[in-house]
Structures are given as C-alpha cells and as structure tokens.
Image (cartoon, rainbow, N blue to C red; front, top):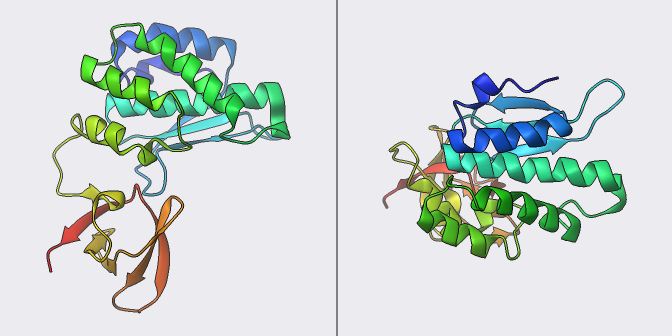
Length: 203
C-alpha cells in the first residue's frame, strides 16, 4: 500500500514531494491515478473490511491542479481517521484540515505568486469542489495543455454544446454543482456537472 513516489513525481511539482512523502508515510493509503473523469477531479473512499483507505486523482490534471486535488482528498482522509461519519464531508473540520495542509505548501516555493494569491482567497472558505471557484479554475487552466474544450460552468445558459464528442445539449439552469441540460436528439433532460469538459457549438 506504499505510494510509488517515482510515479507520483510525474504528476506534481517536484518541490512538493518531500512534504507529500512525510504526510503519506504517516497516514498510508492506496493512491490511484485514473483516466479523465468529467464529473470530478478526484475522490476519497474510506476503508472497508476488504479494502484500505483510497484516494484517486485524474491523470489529465496539470501539476498544480493535481497537487491541490490530492491535498483536498488527503484532508478527507485525515478527517475520516479522526471523526469517521460524525461530521459533514465538507464541514468545518474538513475546511480547517484542508487549509492547514495547503498552508504548508504555500510557504514553500511550489506555486507561482499569482496562483498563491488566488489560493489564499480560496482557502478562507474552501468549497466542496475547487470547480466552484471560477477565479482558481481560470488561473489553473493557464497551465493546461492547449485544447478546444471548456468547462460547462464557463458557458452561458442557453448555449449549445458537445459532450463526449458525440452528444449535443443545450445548457439549462443550475442545480447546485450541476446544470439541467436538454439533449437535442432525445429532448430528455440530464444533470451535468459544471466541471464537465465540453465543446461550445456556435449557433
């Protein structure tokens, strides 16, 4: 169940590795680097009788986004070890833990200055998903590989878009972190997460 740091170093800034090694050696878990998921950047799953605590992070994230997501999920692990089901998933305990972990990273020369400024604002009251922080997402996207996709949250209501390179929708009203969108071919409505990568279709 040890983390393979030789693999992990391909996904996070090199300066963060000593900190991550210290954290993860004290609180071991299984790390899975997954293919791109349209609904989430990462997740934490608590241990069962058969499986250890598990964290997954999307492989397509740039180094800074990967590190932030990994830290987000590790904060869930720490809260789980201390409180189990007694507290809310993204309640005060998690917000405090996540902010504490990120503060350790922020004092090191890991993030560029403009990103540190946005992260400090983000950590004053971190949301359940970093995708809800448009300013943070916009700053992180500067380090993505060039692409013709955008996130669903970035386009106006009523815009037509292509999802998964084959299904065409019209963006509807927001429902928490998702948007009620109508598929043109079937006329059916679906809730699609705001972080979904889509291609905007010009009307």
